[in-house]
Length: 166
Image (cartoon, rainbow, N blue to C red):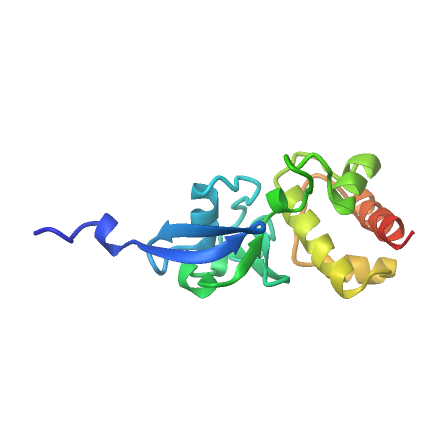
């Protein structure tokens, strides 16, 4: 009975992951979240598994997606960016302005929500380079943090907006 079992039902999906050609392997209806973590992108977190918390947020073709809700087949040929793909330089030693601002402003606490918050902030600043505080709050509304009152997170995003416009 060759060809049966879990491995037989897996499929390889070609995409661009953090700027490089990649193949993600999983069951076709398996979640993008699991395939990304299996590919070493451990910054993508599972919080709720229901698309409510934003811990699994990634950019797909520049748009903010909750990877826990996305079947792997939906990313065939698409460009996926995780928090690991935001830094630049040969070894990723140059942090993205949002990452730098989260560090400088103390926008990270336990770290579970931080990658998703950073990704949501990057998506927001791509759409709205100089957001108001209300627009920042709206831009991260799909991301939950249980450790903070969001004040430092909002400050970090505002600081990143100032830094990128300078």
